[in-house]
Length: 339
Image (cartoon, rainbow, N blue to C red; front, top):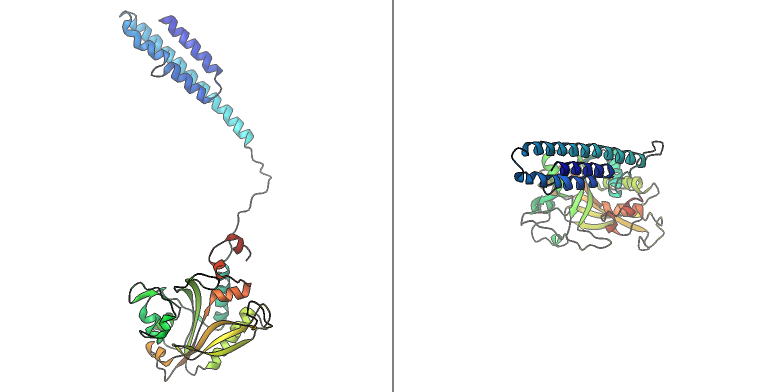
């Protein structure tokens, strides 16, 4: 039995010395010290020995186990040091190499143009107001002189949540909300997202952006409206931009008009972008209807006002020469990186 233990120890130590990786060490441990290992088999056969030999053999077997375990630990450390030294040599870093600059994000073209428009109107004394995107039917329609069964509701293609709650179809509800809590003079713009049930194509999207404007004070005239919008058009499109107003109809303004600007692409000469007319329609406007002032708790006999609403997406397309509104919402980095 002693000879077997000596032989196991010698053989195990030789194998450990020859081992070159941690997996080999684990195989050696299992071979000699595992549940079915050679040393374990000897310990299980000690019952066949004479009673006086058992303590001696048991002590010798434990010594052999300790020697093998100690050698395994020592060899394991040597292998770890070799592996670490190899990794350090292979993975060395040249600190003199220039670093890689991370890609930096940029403002979306919608945000860029919105900031420009906001700065223009702030420079003319306007404040920025906000309203909820989930709106009451009262503020979105009724208080804007669009009662139940009014034909204008059919053109809005509204997303209704229930009979009285909807996703706002324009930023105009903020006009009423502002007039309810603020006495004239009022001079605000209202940028924000709006929603309509439109089929997606090059010129339509169920989600788009508007910028509403409202001025209410004494002696406000159509001339004030035209002056403000002409200053805006020249500031955003360039000093040579020309404007023209065409009669139109909106339930919440009277009189009403649509404003065109000379095409930025062809300078009014006529091209594919402006359908060879030389003009691009960018907004609707007009004098605030007396009924709308009354809904806002403002006396129409004492005060007048004007309002306008423009599509931010359309202005962005005009400035950058984009012919498909979907490009603004698909978040294709190849497209956005151009701006």
